[in-house]
Image (cartoon, rainbow, N blue to C red; front, top):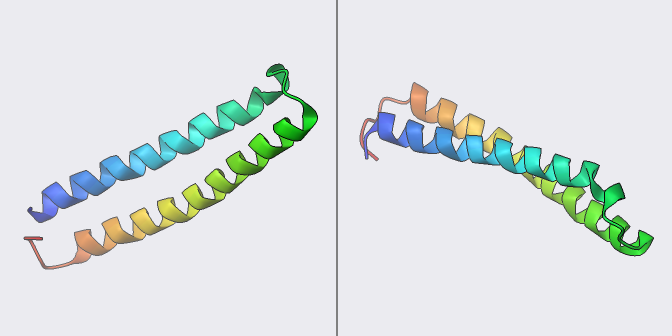
Length: 77
């Protein structure tokens, strides 16, 4: 895999991470319409909050990895 192919692959992964966070936010915003019991509503919210936090960490990692590959001299991975 060339450097450009790897960067393109990683960029797609970063976009997926952004989409995951967007969907989680939309789901969280519509929970009040769900009709779930309060306990279940809180459990779902907690899971979505965890997903969002994990997602933030992965986005930072992906950005750092992309930058490292772009700055590196290696062209074949």
